[in-house]
Length: 261
Picture 1 (cartoon, rainbow, N blue to C red):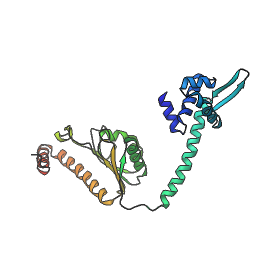
Picture 2 (cartoon, rainbow, N blue to C red):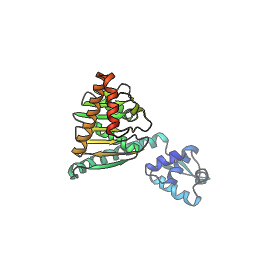
Picture 3 (cartoon, rainbow, N blue to C red):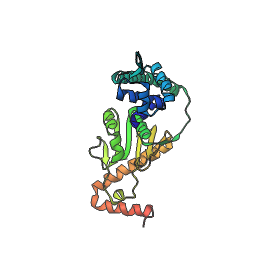
Picture 4 (cartoon, helix red, strand yellow):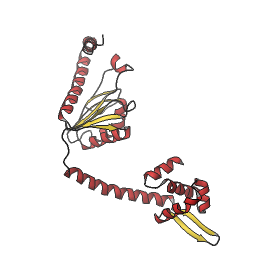
């Protein structure tokens, strides 16, 4: 019940309106008193609430000899109407915002903070769809699986390169990172990088640990992180060709560089 109420509120209904409609769907044709009793809405507020829903076309009112009763708009009709309204608003909003976006001057070399997992994932999906020539990624399995379908849909239309870790069957052109003591350490950070056309980039750590990432169109950021991804790819390819000799050497040199000894 509470989830339904919250979802209806997200569509623009007040809490009392949402509770009233849910109550009517559950009970059918009933009196205002029965709606009030079932939903917990004070009787002093129920008539105004039902009046508002009648004006919105969500509730139907019927005068009978023994009193007034209320009925909900049938669920199928309500959902069809809600979908139609949402799609109309979406199309109108999309056109107006995109027009505004193309006419307004943007600040140069932005680095923006993105918060909340759903927002970050949506931003990444949007970038993938915008790619025209090339996508570079560096991802662990958690982030890759969130974006797998989107990457597979554009694979073939754009070149996808980079490296993944613990990912089964990534798209063609993406390397698999070797498993090392460092990657399997509990303290190892699961970074991700998504860059498109060397123009825009999102990077951050595992969203399961920290729902925070960064967006940038700054060419310096993009060059440095794309170069980081390339070096990671290169080292992994070199180690695979000379596994016995290089793996230990890379591990030793890393510890020296980061003063881990």
